[in-house]
Image (cartoon, rainbow, N blue to C red; front, side, top):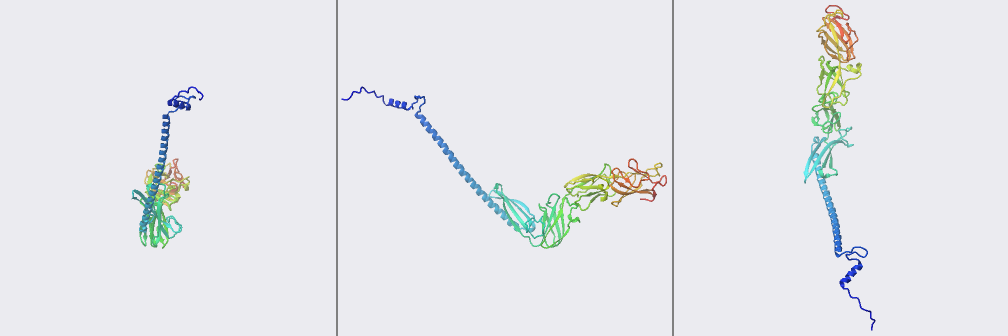
Length: 476
């Protein structure tokens, strides 16, 4: 017999055993022995679902990156292909333009500059074509080269289009040899720029006409021989005021062209301006003026001898030098103010195509002519007395007739003068200098002296009759 172990405990059943198991593992929904919450089956399923969502999002992002990279590569490939296609079309257009140029007359190619638009497959291409003569030896533009070498025509066609981006334009160029002969290059310029559109004509062994390009050049291929050359542009003049350069004896009008040589001739033409010259101080009058600039070969003179006016306007034939003109009363350098005691000369700058105004000081002729013999027996102021003045430096003369003993407000330039006044076969002669705008300085003292207002007094002794100092028989 075995040992009696006593009564066994009653089996709690499967549910109780599960509960005990959960209590031992601390996974029930109550607080465990240390106060930690437990987790249910629902908690475990929720965590699994969250992990799956994150994985899906990450996968989607990776797929999007792959798709974007693929599309970017395809776009770059398409753009590269489009650029290559456009460049091929642009190159074809440039070559076609060069073929057209090679078939055109040489005269049409000289200093050419033209632009046209061509549309191909939805793309608009701009074709710009230029040409110029170049020197063979140094490949420099013949318009500015200094050696007389046989030249060629360099043509360049450049093609651009809107979608080219930073790519370089497509360029094609050619060298075209002109036919045998002599190359004449005529360049026209203003003081600041080249003149486009000036007409150039030559006549001689053959005749030809051309027009200057944007570089101011007209180029002509001619036979050897002697030619007359003229440049002209409407509204323009050369430095000496000529509209046609062949009217100006100081520039090249005729040239002999040697066979096989390159001859260069330059002219200056610029938009003509004008001058308004006023005699000063206000109210004075003058008849003639000198206008000069160092860029001129000789001075120009405006006004009419004996026609006295308070102001004068020149024709629109004044060349617009960048430096000022010197303007003064008189018709020779002997009348230059600085040569006659003045500190400076009147100066004025004329703008291109514009006008300018300058005031020129003149010296009034202040005289009073009496019929008597002296201040004590003055007689009357003579009307109709003859006055003759000779500018001894310029060898020019003026004649006046007095009115109530004076000659009005006629003014003279600065310089040296001889003087004569006569009436009724009696005359007085002497000399004076104009060195001040206030009046003359008499080197021969008038027989009546000079009063406080710088007016020279003359007595001729016609009525009452007599023989005042310095008066002799005769007429001026």
